[in-house]
Length: 337
Image 1 (cartoon, rainbow, N blue to C red):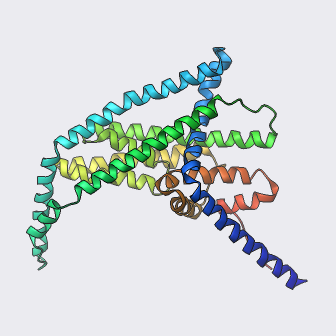
Image 2 (tube, one colour):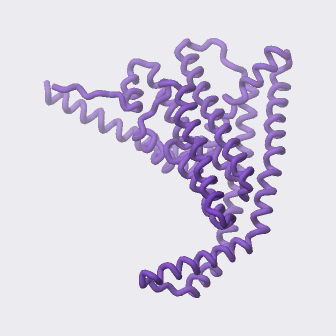
Image 3 (cartoon, rainbow, N blue to C red):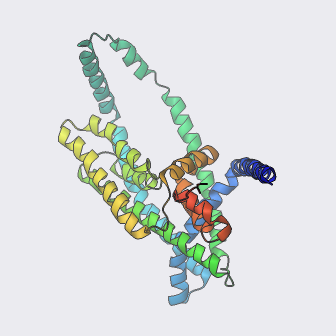
């Protein structure tokens, strides 16, 4: 009896591993279609309340409501893009100054290292800086930009089809409960990420940091990555701040103030809104970042936490998968014989 039970466990475990590998292969193979679809689904969830308000209270047709909602999004982009563009132009205009500052910092570093009898050839470093493959980097950025634009168009088309589709009325209570919790998670994460990005961007702008709006936008995006996203967002502006400012107080403010914002929103505001319903164990978050990063790249890293949270919400609504949800929370306890 025990041998049969042990054999059954081995077979079940083997099938689970094979199924996991198969799912990972399918997700990777179908990523050109699945990634835009997942993003489109998230956008639909965010836009749905605006459309529902227009239909229920303004009594407009759904097509009109969808058109107005998309126009609002385009309008927001039209407002935001010029700020980002002006930041990039200002930065490019100061590129020569930054290059000279980098060379000065290198000279200072070499002089300091000489005190410890560490000899570094100054000309070798200068030549290395002058022979950086900037053209290769530029072509890579352009190719990635073209790829991004093509995926963006696909996301827009998918979002349009999803928004124009009719909602299913006859759904089960379990499904409605899952959708409600998923919407709460997405809305809350979007709200906290937007707030963090705006406040951080305003701080950088008030401190006169170049690329302030770009760093604010990156803060918004990176806030979707748990654990490490906030750290990266705080560290990114430091090289620009070191090159731009000569006084240490400005550099420290650029580090300290955004850190305070991330701490307040991430550790106080977000848990109060979320409660305990969306808690994921840190190890679960790290593993999900690795898994989705390997499958879908940087987009997978950004979507890892929302997807894992949605999976957990779905699993905990069914008795057969409730233990998996508890495992994702880190609350499962092994029975002792």
